[in-house]
Length: 197
Image (tube, rainbow, N blue to C red; front, side, top):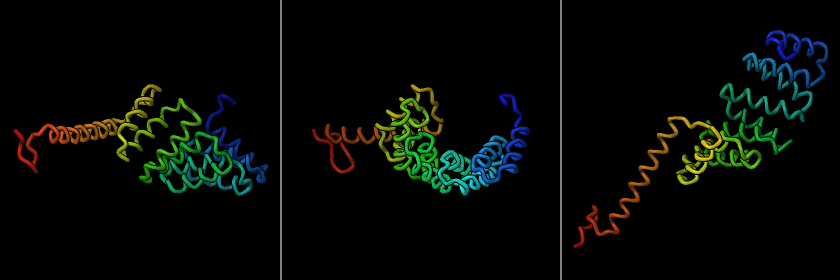
C-alpha cells in the first residue's frame, strides 16, 4: 500500500466504513484519508463519528484538533486537544497543537506554557523553541525570547522575517531605555533636569 493513490485510499476507507460502520478505527482512517486529500470538513465529520463510537480514541482527538486548526477554528482545535491531553498528557503534538491555537487566540502566556511542555517531552523540537520565543517576545521577556530563538535556530528552525523585525525593534527599544538610564546617571541633561558640571 506504499504507492496507494489518494483516490484509492479514500475509496478503500469508505468501503471499510460501509462494511464496518460500528468501528471507530474505520471512521478515523476515513478521516485521515479525507485530511490527506484536503477535504477537512469531511475529515472533521469522520473524526467526530469515530469519537462518538470511541471517546478514548486519542488519535481522533488529535486529528480533530488538527483539522480544526487547518480550518482556523482555534477554539475547537484547543478543545479537541484538551480532550486528548486528558487521555494522554505525554504527546508533544497535543501540546504543540494547543500552543498553535493559543498563538492565534492571542494568548502568549499559554502559548509559552504549551511549547515549554513540548520541549519537556521533545528537547529537539525546533518549532516549539521558536513558538516559545514568539510568546516570550509578546510578553516582553526579551532575554527568554532570544534564548529560545537561539536554540530554535540551532535545531534548524528558521524564524520568520516578521518575528526577526519585531525582535530587533524590541532590542532597539530596550537599548534606548538603557541609554536613558545611563545618561541620567552620568549627569547629562535630561528633560527633567539641567546638566551637572
